[in-house]
Length: 418
Image (cartoon, rainbow, N blue to C red; front, side):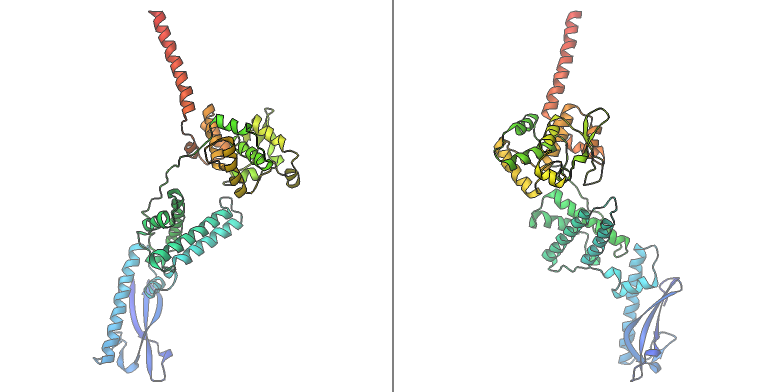
């Protein structure tokens, strides 16, 4: 039987596997462009009851009718499978047709198996120190994998769902689960969805599935309202006395971040060697961001310079060659809540607010060009910096004073002229 000009199906007896009762297994041979793939139909028959010419059982006995009905079902199933593969692949091979029809091979992988396979590749790339990939990227995908497993258990009571069974509603269903059942914020949920979409794309490239069930799903992010300190709050925080040494150290590290824009991990890794004399006689912080290895060199102003000098002889800094005495991230954030209360600041102080304070209050409000701000913040593009570059009331007020002065001057000239 020919499926098309290049593909044929043949049923034949594998006489080498004849059983003691004289029956011989019936095999199916698929031939595509001269290449073959074979599998057993699970049926047996004696040679005398088989027609090699027609490829079917002879006569109308109950055995013959049952066997021929089964062979017709196999033919129809192979035809349907071929049509499906032909619609989604440039080339269909005999082995591909056989494996897909039998439900074996890569197309039968579970979503867990595909995640594990993809994450293993990420881990190997990270351990090989690929410049664009870090171990924490692999770790985020491991967390995403667990989120997907939890979702599958919740929705289907089955975490071993075949990736070929995933429907196109997966993206919306997973998003609903993350934001309601798992109670995750929308932007965080979108990060997990983006990672999952990436894994599905990998599955398509590996030909595990013809198309991604998340191909049409759009990962949309909403820019959050980013808190920052005003200039008065920043200076007030720096000048507020701290009665406990541990709080004073954390306060100084936080203020240092407000004047450099460095994230917690970047400040933690600073050493005295990162402070370098510049060509203009000033001192700069020279280092690459841990997050993306982008250059993040920052000129040091008076306050961060004073903080560096203050801790030059600190026992911790001396023992571990650190620029500043930085606590663990957990303690650091906990102490910042105490510090905010002491300084009378009703805002959530975090490394993110420090970074935003540097971008907005220190740089942009003082007319630093956004290109220079982007360079110091270590951003990949100015578009990222624009997230921070919201116009503030301080800048609007100063700009309007300049506009008002110009208009007043023009009015005075007009009066003089008249």
